[in-house]
Amino acid sequence: MRLEPALPIVAMLLAGLADDGGGRDEAAPEEQNGRGGSRLRILIVEDEALVALDLENILREAGFEIVDIVDTESDAVARAEHLRPDVVLMDIALRQGDGISAARQLRNVPTQVVFVSGNSDPSTLAAVHALAPAGFIRKPFAAERLPAQIAQAVARPRN
Image (cartoon, rainbow, N blue to C red):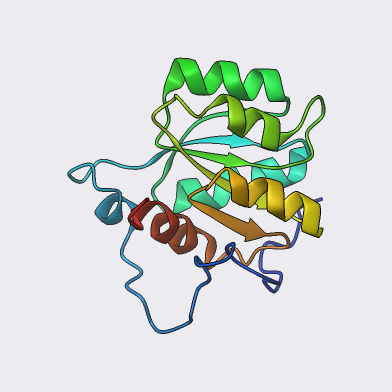
């Protein structure tokens, strides 16, 4: 059974990164990654297999390169350190460990973290915000908007 990918989006990005709906450029990912035209390389960290496969299909069809899919904190850290993806799409609740702890361990890895999670209680959002991720996309996400949301999040200037 396939998950319905076009669910309405509840919220997109953390404070200061919200999509204003103002008709931003939605160029293809390879045009927005700042790497001279090469595709964004993405590591998916997601413990729900159907969601992970849905993310993979959506992003491959949009021109992103999926370097791996993992479902634990330790695998996320190990694969990100080894593969050096441009972006780590990070769920917060993982099979073992959690995405916030994994992202904290990736501070010295040249990658950008975009959280994709339905977990949005105030303490969790505060912990995520303290890590200054490239973005936070709330589940359920809108499949047709996801590639542009990721490209926009990683294209924003970082502090």
